[in-house]
Amino acid sequence: MTGIPAPDSLRISPELKASLSVLVIDDERTLRESCRSVLEADAIVSKCAGGRRRPGARAAARYDIVLTDLYMSDVTAWSC
Image (cartoon, rainbow, N blue to C red; front, side, top):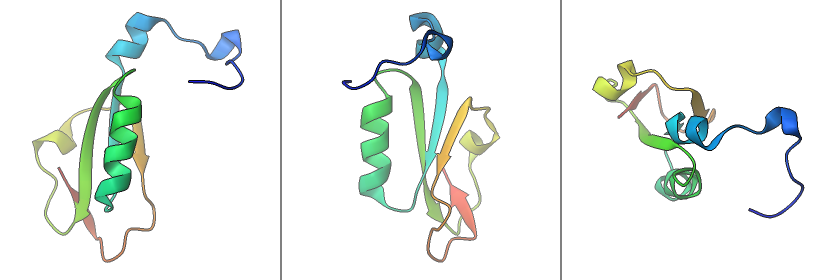
């Protein structure tokens, strides 16, 4: 990535980066896949679509970071 480098206090080791677990929840497939493609170079990424089904086994997993769309249309739950 280009841009302003992160301050030393925000830098993490490559080992920690590789072990990060990220969940991306969005009802738009294109956005979900874009987030996954950017993040998977530095983390373990799971993704979920918005929907009416109950969460699957992945929903019970623990994640270090969750990125979610707060305004998914007609979504009362998410599914993995």
